[in-house]
Length: 248
Ligand SMILES: NC(=O)c1ccc[n+]([C@@H]2O[C@H](COP(=O)([O-])OP(=O)(O)OC[C@H]3O[C@@H](n4cnc5c(N)ncnc54)[C@H](O)[C@@H]3O)[C@@H](O)[C@H]2O)c1
Figure 1: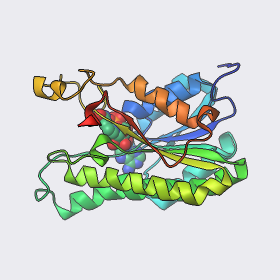
Figure 2: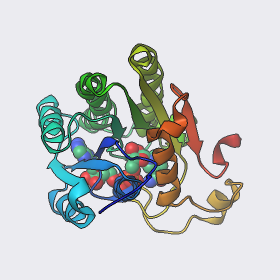
Figure 3: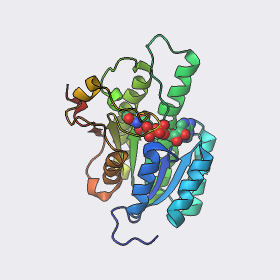
Figure 4: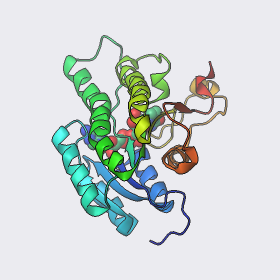
């Protein structure tokens, strides 16, 4: 694909969890805006198929975000394919809902390992490459569940609250090197693995001022903005995209 004057021309992005859901939509939007993208995921077949569809500007690497060795492979593959990355989208995560005292220690450890430790690993493994690239933009997926106390969201919620703290301190540490770090806090987004496809019930809908779920592409538009130089003076910030659900 050939792009001229794209908003992400010259960007080399790593997107985790890019085989499905919002990660896949972000990968499409990034390539359409002129970026070259390394898509990573545990789901190999879907990831490879999407990268093949996106063409020369995309590669797929099998990746477990919770393992440091796996990040080393992603960093090496990115360098070999396109050069040092200047964008990292920490999107991969797992989800479960249940009462705070209902989860097993193994379930909780696994969720924190992927959602929190995996995001920290990504920042720590990719930041050195961004310094080489002369700076960059790191985007971490938090959630409205990382700002509020939704029922049955204690475990997932604590992982997403942690992401906001990680984002702010990392922005402090990496800012002098020209590396920006921001968090996206989506509300209910339609047609993702996590949200499913069932319509919201009237009570859930009434709690959203815009009276609908968000579209994956709407979150991708925010991710493209935060990856691009249009957001060059924005770092350490929470970017809520929730149809107004978080206002009360
Ligand atoms: N869907 C929503 O409404 C919503 C709302 C708020 C926040 N979010 C956040 O947005 C992000 C994307 O959510 P989604 O709904 O598109 O999710 P999804 O479940 O559709 O996709 C997540 C992807 O991550 C991959 N993944 C899981 N564990 C992995 C691991 N260890 N290593 C690498 N890849 C792994 C999965 O295989 C999957 O392809 C997540 O961080 C999620 O917490 C989603």
